[in-house]
Image (cartoon, rainbow, N blue to C red; front, top):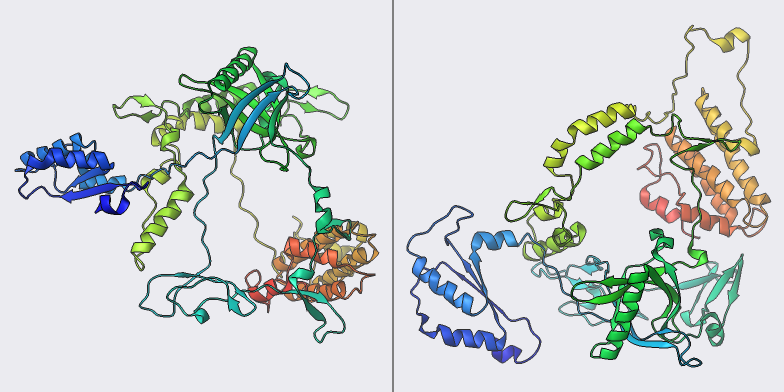
Length: 604
């Protein structure tokens, strides 16, 4: 059946035989069976039920002759044989999916201008990914058919102009969740103030300040660089001058063109020259015509069985983030004096204690191999992506068991989620010494959120200083220049709800004034910060209604242009910061649910 169906096509041919070896077996046809399996490229896997297994301490009588016949068949066919217990445990070991190598670049690696100089070097090369992130399977929009007898799920189909654009199987068109996209612009003459427009009427553009700059389709080529595919070496740098933080991409491997011996010899000479001189090459790479050029660093790699160039993308000037942080080994005073002994700097004894802990937690000899010899604990070949294989496990389980709960992750996926017990036990003493040397103390629990009735700090004498001095409390007026600290101080000393509400109104007025008087978007970030503080404080004092009223009024004034012109850019910043109404999930005193808070952020 396999030979008739698969023919000579590229199928994975495998026969899995599950047997208890209790029936009669005739091994006269074993040679012909082996020849057929070998000629058709069929893999044979025999899983024995109740087979002898010394590892699990099980021995079954009266099966040795039959098992020997199966073992003979498997050996001659280059197959596999094992017990059912082994097969079940193997299910917990992820299977790595082999990927077909796809070159990202096929062309020439050049040094010098081949058009103008005869001394230029041109090598035919191919570039493949060396390390590439494997993403887990992504969930797509699905729906269960209305017929409860069906267990399969159907993909949703898009609706355009009232008709379904994708084919559907075993389901009615009305069962599919419809989806459509609609574009609207403001139009005072329309009934609802908005007019629908066709997607064909839209044009691409760029933001220049607060102006939308339209570039027609005929001019789009101006924004693109006209480039030709190629990898051109621009120069060389010593390995010591390159810093690891400049790696911007996954690593790629460049090899000589296959079946091109001259290219292999030329590339090998370049690789050995870089290796002997301890240098890297800097190259300009364009993988395809009219594609954006990138700068890559080429590093030599020489192994026992192959040679290649490894490359990673390096940044342009605009890609660097030159942040400056204070040094960790010294303190620089205002006068420029450098202090190496300070309470904020680690002492020699602290460094020694930390070094001892690092040595005790060394993983390079913590693991055990098959012969119980010390080896590396986390070997790359045994370290699998927990997220990727957990999703795969859950999907496969749910496909077969639609109602049963999903089992816990496989042990191999959680094996490296914590240090091994041997390391934990070994490092207890050094960890205790480090804690003592560093004077580590337990951080007190975070203070409870401030509620409506705040407990005032009382002096040790128990006297009311305010009453003794005869000062009468009065409502504080917030200063726009120091609004946030004064607002928080007012809430801390508030004795009634009226004081809280008045402070919130003042804060709202300051925010609106900043937006109204802002030149362009100059003061938008300051107003956004105050709005966030106002929202957080109203959540803590459980007064969501005060904030929601201020927020509703602010949105209305922003969208109708009541704050000195078009200020919708401020509303976009509010949307980006997700400063919506306070819902019930944040404060039980609110009358807004989560869906209403989400809808409130829409531009309408």
